[in-house]
Image 1 (cartoon, rainbow, N blue to C red):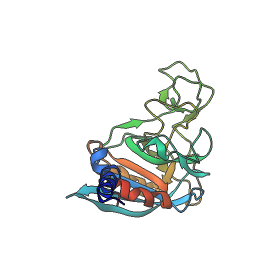
Image 2: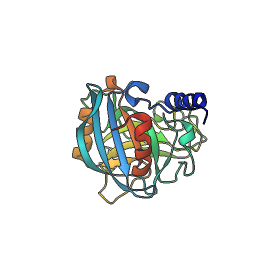
Image 3: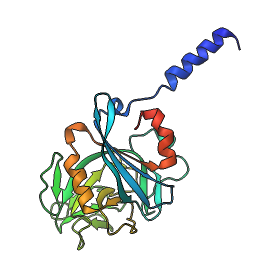
Image 4: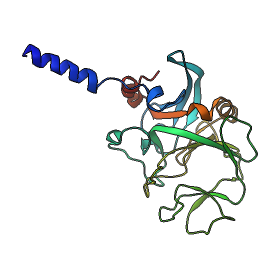
Length: 239
């Protein structure tokens, strides 16, 4: 190869394949990494990091989690749309979304004392999963809005799975109809019991996570099968 062309090639590789620092890119100092063994695997693990002195420091290690009954599928988040290839999340498919997402707040059956905004849910609180509704993928109170949906998920369950939860900013700004809705992190029903598309864990573990999260530090969720995560580690300087 011509030496000049070779230099141009090296410059191209350097500038266009240079890793982007997730900490800088999304102004985040808190990173929650959820990985599973494959796209279809429902069991996985969560590792939690804080950005200190120019590096991601491990805070919580190898916490067991479960995903949706179908595993994971790429979904609309902060990551480039070019990554959304092959298996894509849709409404009702039982997949947890794969990608990069902000965690925007908390919810629970009682007031939560934490460093994140929180919503106390009751029997009038629903998450709308009807794509035809103007409130699709939104939390609403039936005593304050006019119902225009045929399907919505109650946020005040008979069980304790939503006793404590975290909102995942999935399929937002703008919302894609039928792209999937009502994605949270919450308490599991058991270590082998998948969700409808959320990520779940033991109550003690979600309380540790809630205690860690800080709104001012823009917490980010990176959720992927391990093989995909390993491919993104260089691109975003992930731990």
